[in-house]
Length: 89
Image 1 (cartoon, rainbow, N blue to C red):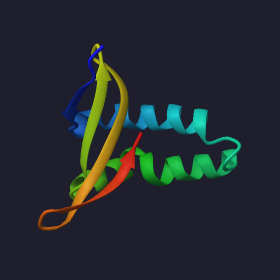
Image 2 (image 1 turned 180 degrees about the vertical axis):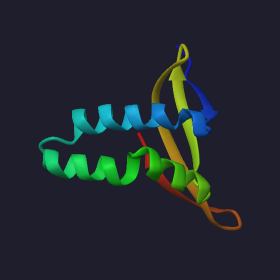
Image 3 (image 1 turned 45 degrees about the vertical axis):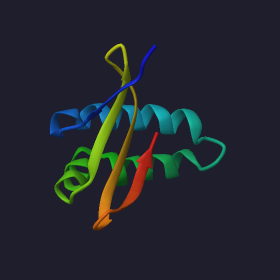
């Protein structure tokens, strides 16, 4: 099955939030506490936080198989032609 990648918009932020919650709650227990997971999700993936990141120039992309979102990434351009990868899940 091919993976489709497309640029996310403000409308997609809820999907990114849902993916982050699912991914973090599945893969981070045992590495960090549930309290830390909750804190990080609130800090980086609340609706307000995601919207602010978008306004601050973060480019978000969604990966999907058969139109079902399976992952995402975000980056910013730091200087001309140089980029910083913030998220890759």
